[in-house]
Length: 188
Image 1 (tube, one colour):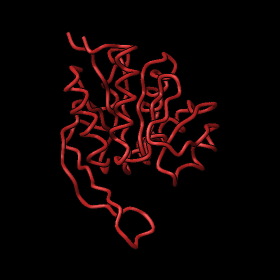
Image 2 (cartoon, rainbow, N blue to C red; image 1 turned 90 degrees about the vertical axis):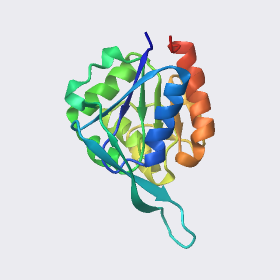
Image 3 (cartoon, helix red, strand yellow; image 1 turned 120 degrees about the vertical axis):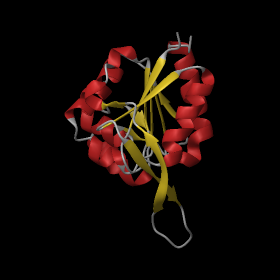
Image 4 (cartoon, one colour; image 1 turned 30 degrees about the vertical axis):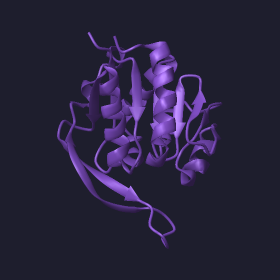
């Protein structure tokens, strides 16, 4: 039986940041589930960098069904966690169930990959203290306020935590995460 990996997200998650790890993990042989505030079709977005803009632009992206609501997830059934970015982390980080789920993975030394705005959730869960993490550079102050060290890198590895800045970092971020995941919990 394939081992399971959990992705936690919600509406306005960045399309590539959800679907790239989802497909890459399935390709590797993992059973991947997406959890969100409720079981429904999620509306993802596309963030792009446009010349002349001080920040990214946002457009409607793909829709995708959530397999489970957060309250239905039993984290002990999963070997790893992926937390994509986009705007979803800004609102799901305040959910006490999400915070409990994230703490489970950190406290049990299970592989965690977060990207872009995803570290906002780890910060809210109180698990960044003393950790090194990359993130979208605009949230570096949030990482520091949570006791973490912000590193501006495409694939920052701190034990079982692997982080990156944005979807542009996918090749390095996912390559490093797959190495950590294979060593801790091979697919089969």
